[in-house]
Amino acid sequence: MGIYQLTGNVQHYAWGGKSYIPQLLNLVPNPKQHYAEWWLGAHVSSPSLIEVTGQKQSLITFLAQKPTALGQQSITKFGQELPYLLKILDVAKPLSIQLHPTKQQAELGFAQENTNGVDLADPKRTYKDNNHKPEMMIALSDFWLLHGFKTKTKILKTLKARPSLHVLATKLEQQDLHDFYADIMQADQIQLVQWLLPIIEENKAKYQANKLELNNPDYWLLYTMEAMDIPLEKLDAGLVCFYLFNIVHLRKGEGIFQDAGIPHAYLRGQNIELMACSDNVIRGGLTPKHVDIPALLAIIDCREVEPNIIPIAPEQARVFTYSTPAQDFALTNVRYVQGEIHQCQARSAEILFVMQGELKISQKSTALNVKKGESVFIESDSEYHIEGIDEGYCVIAKLP
Image (cartoon, rainbow, N blue to C red; front, side, top):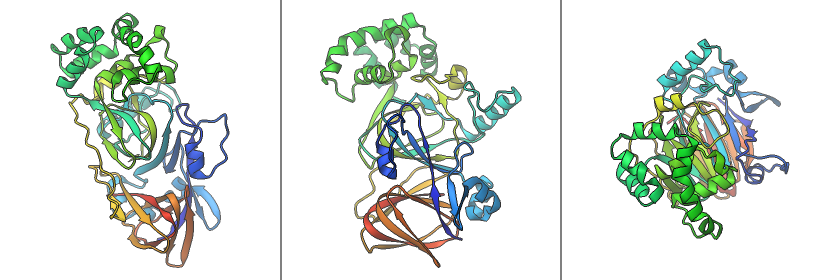
């Protein structure tokens, strides 16, 4: 039982912003760098550093030496590894359309690529580990994303409203969503130009004059082409997905859960993301990275989705755990003002991250002052209390 300072890692992906994460972490930014994600956890590709008796070591090493820190419930269900990964994201440019496998699909895919001798560092590698990757997110700003297929009725309405997509509407009336999507993802440049060029030409002036609403797929078509430098002679089949998937707008504090197989793409904004400890991503376009269409079509969930928005934590709830169906993780939001004390108990290993203000966390004879952008690892079965030093809030990742 104990509490320890924890330091995460920045991921400098090209879609990331320049200032949000450095400001949150109190870092001096390198103007040539993109700051896309901040990882807190024990994923093998980028483990956090934990400070034990003045020495920093990998959280993976620490847990290997002291698996009891995870707690018996966690070990029984997930083995001797931290089952979740906590991230902060700054989405300045759209991410690839992507989805994540079920646990069974991940185990099969990972084993198959190992058998085939595909190196883990190979850019054509699809499965990086053998775990599934359900994930939840809470918006830290106005946030826009794609999430799941719209109902067939809504897709048909969207397609029929655009003359160049009438041919797709006719096609969808004769196919199920999976076959329809498969044909689109395998479309050639001639087809993509026939479908999309008339929309691009009709809306270019409106887009440049900021006269397109953000819930209009035409806006995101043009925005994505601009942000990702997609030329007219090299259109991406993923661009058609703006007309097929739900365009979701989350207000600050709202969230959403992405289950296995549900296609999604983050478009713009900042968020907290909590997921099963995995880096398995099967991409469906809008990326220079490897797009494995057969793998995508094998696991995509084409069910019609009405987005289920996770509501904002109620103001009166000082300690609030967001509701999701996840078994691998849960996220608790803790608010505090100066002098306010919360008694807490860790039933599994926890990671606490201060989003705003400053707090003091105490456990037996140990006390740490933790400021905005700093984090703590808390061993299972630790009773501790949080005292507000400067008004703000923190989030705590743990098991449900």
